[in-house]
Length: 129
Image 1 (cartoon, rainbow, N blue to C red):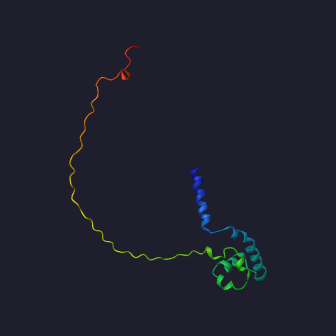
Image 2: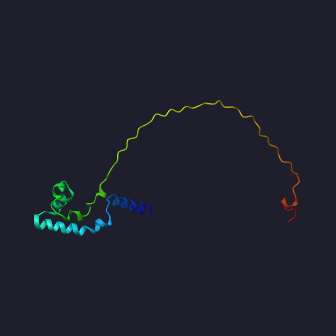
């Protein structure tokens, strides 16, 4: 059971790392329609279409059509942005004041409690069986 749970969590993290949201899934029909448009008008294959819209040729092809904004994965929240922060280490000098150990006088005194050596009859073993 724990292996199944671990595999399920791993797959969930993998799918979430793709940053696919429901809006992008709903735009897949627009992607297929636009791919058919490119196939009919330009003779592009599906892989050429993907290269023009999501690959290296994206910058030169973006201005040709108005439908590019409706394609999935075109919004900027999928871009990974890193902010570099410089940390400057400040030298901290700590002084440790060593105090000599002072021996504490022995002040523990134990006295055994004074009790009657004769126990009451409740705590005695049975005398007759």
